Length: 277
Image (cartoon, rainbow, N blue to C red; front, top):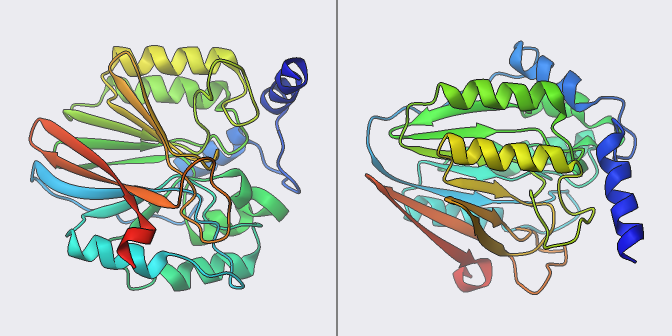
């Protein structure tokens, strides 16, 4: 069983397409299109305050034939006066144009703008064509007050050499006190390699080194549909369980995370959708 799981991981990590159904792009192509401005351009919030709140949710898997938690999430963000919402990927379920249009409809008028990472489901059925035009880049970053937010493309369980080199160059120049990295695939999934984590061991080792070297405090991810929080050295790794009404979650229930930054301190708390009805 362990050998089979390891083989699946290696297949996902070594090939350019991994487990993605019906995509003709790879991570290097998406990264360079994102960095060269060939995607929709995002507007980023600006603030000089060192005290603010933001939310993190993942794997909402929006589709027009399924209910969702979006109204509940929006109401909570307004009540919390959240500056923005971060999303860990799998914004839609099958990469279809009608799902991307539904996504835009559901987040339209949100109190706090939702900034997405790209997930494997977003690439299904050549979903990148719609993603880049309607949602934006797969690799990007922004600053807010004393915090830096860095979105990476791990939608095919690999970052690729170009992106990993870019991560190091970018982190070297960060001056903000608090540093967050957001991406779809977790770095680890327990002591055994599984398809629920980044598939190339060398990439995981390099990320952990870079996070330690450049003071990244949080790595926020999804994909696994579980609710986990663990620490490696000085960095906290959070896997957010699916913020979906119809997807199963391992040993947990649909939730999101609230982060309150107050100067030098960061407070985080898991919020369950069921408690907000």
